[in-house]
Length: 116
Length: 109
Image 1 (spheres, rainbow over the protein chains, first blue to last red):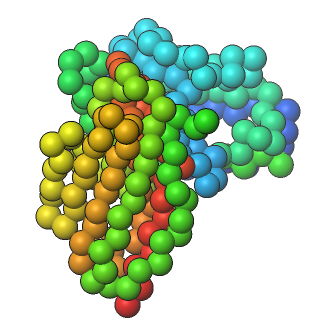
Image 2 (cartoon, rainbow over the protein chains, first blue to last red; image 1 turned 120 degrees about the vertical axis):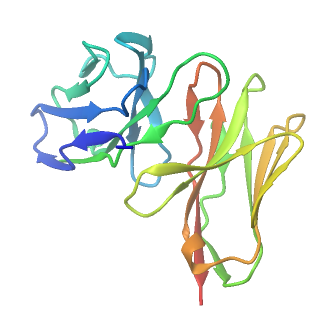
Image 3 (tube, each protein chain N blue to C red; image 1 turned 90 degrees about the horizontal axis):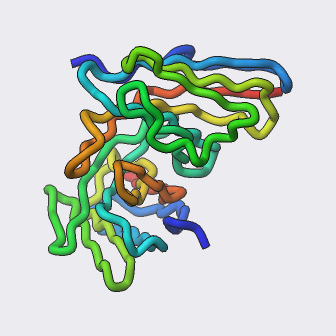
């Protein structure tokens, strides 16, 4: 079974530029998550989708970050404009569904963003 | 106060040693608990779930104390391949996971 796919794997940009990350979840997984992991910290949830609807975006800095999952499959996370403190690994994860007992979240390899 | 607190380490242990990691969480309404493992420059992967009754998976034993809001992980007979960062994770409901900063383990020959 194919895992969660993410691209690009690495991205270097200058501050105030824009950047977009792409994620393709495991086939059949209804729930998709974007996390930010700053060096030396654990992942922090930015946004959670159930199909194409947003479940939780309380920790997404909405003045500069946006995310969409228009057809309930692939998702894109955008940062515009980027700041130095956005340097981090952006992890996408998916799980089978939202309801019921915990469903394991499977993570993609991440996109490592460096903002200069 | 952080939602999930862990000692960042590193814990340096020789092969064959027993090592224990602890974690505390602040949200008493948290629903389920896990340990994830993260290798250097890799994604986190689920190691095991944690139950009040305790659970064991080979050399790994996890324990939850809801009254004290405390979670532990015990690794017996450490292997070189156990070297990684161990993330304490709390599910606050609706699959919202809150991660600790992780505890780094280094197992040496």
